[in-house]
Image (tube, rainbow, N blue to C red; front, side):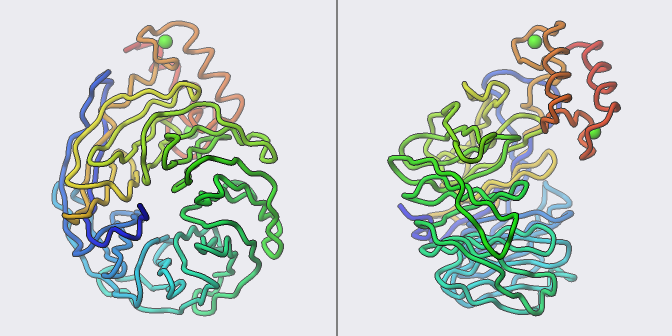
Amino acid sequence: MSRLSVMSGSVVILAVAGAACGQGCTPPLLGAVEPADTPNRIVVEGGTAYAAALLRGVVAVDISDPMAPVVLGGFDTPGTAVGVACDGTTVFVANGSEGVYILDASDPGQMQLLSQFVTSAPAYDIKVVGSVAYVGVYTHGLQVVDVGDPTAPALLGEIDTTGVYGLAVGEGLVYVADGAGGLRVIDVSDPTDPVLVGSLAIQSRAWWVDLFGDRVLVATDQEGLLVVDVSDPHAPFVEGVYQATSVAFAVDAARRVALVGVGQTLEMVDLADPAAPRRLGLAGTLDESLAVTLAGDLCLVGVGIRDDAMQVFEFSGCVPCPADFDRNSVVDTRDAVGFLHGWAQGEPWGDFDADGALTTADVIAFLNAWSVGC
Ligand SMILES: [Ca+2]
Ligand SMILES: [Ca+2]
């Protein structure tokens, strides 16, 4: 079933916080809001969530009080808003056959059109890094667009692939969930000349992709959620599989967990052993999960088919005790060795204090937690 066949829905926010609660933990639902159509994708900037809400365009939701999210306003784009990105006060909408709309969201309740960019085929997903937007253009592939001046976007380069549904941006590389084309790895170090450098064929379809250190996770139709090693971008390979059919998930790389929308449940998955992902817990959602986004301790879920909503959960309480690095329920020297090895390798979970930098402060923070135990 195509994501686009779902024409109604809602966004749900889920957050997990606190100490370990082991197997079967249920991330609590904090609040929900109805943005009038299905939140197909969600991004968060500060205390504001922006939902690509299909026929309603993009909708801004104040989540500063996650117990009581409030719709601030929307911008009703022509066509169907399927993807959204945000950079500061600028919002980028992948708007299906209407291309990309760029909006000024200085006042999220009164978004203003800055410009639009015509794409060569329907725009399904968009990510923005610095002054460059990466646009997943369904049947055409990837378009790289200069958005340094958001009033005058300009095409830099493009590459044709099978059928883009989602994309994730790493260091000089874009990972594409390419539908029947599986996973594509595209070198964008020269944005005027994107080059396909690696592929992973799958039997069904790839719907969504997200980064996890030097791995990516790929949601597929029939083969589950794949943990793919992309340390050699020319030769990606499947390292682990979580058996779930999903079109929406998000990864907290620092805490080594993924939140996965599986039908009408939100499943929390432990990635501590990437070769053997396992379920930590789950929560029910109002309807089918179409969008999953993490923001701090919160998880926002866009749901819809019959009922549209954005639900807000808290997930941090279901993250296992961080001192038990290998998550075997015993805190010992192997945990310290495991953490220090990852920190030295520059792994995302080495940022123990979650300040965005790998420093000796992270080692001190980990050893303090380790000495306390679980
Ligand atoms: Ca342990
Ligand atoms: Ca740090």
